[in-house]
Length: 53
Image 1: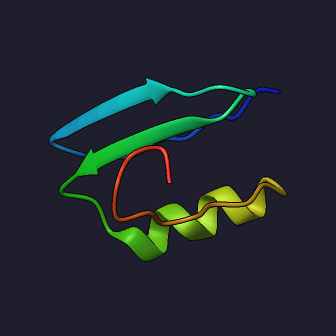
Image 2 (image 1 turned 60 degrees about the vertical axis):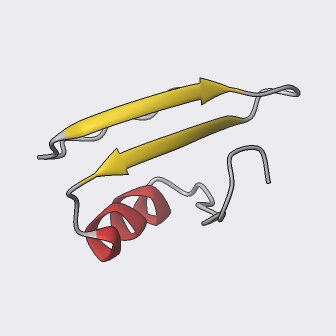
């Protein structure tokens, strides 16, 4: 699976999890914009309080 996003942000951290999942920590981004772009790709974005959840 491949997804392309063009975002303006201060920093981004990606953590690889098991079973093909990833956790992404993005600083200084409009969350509604990110959700809209991911949903437009036909994917699901879940917001977690802690990495891995």
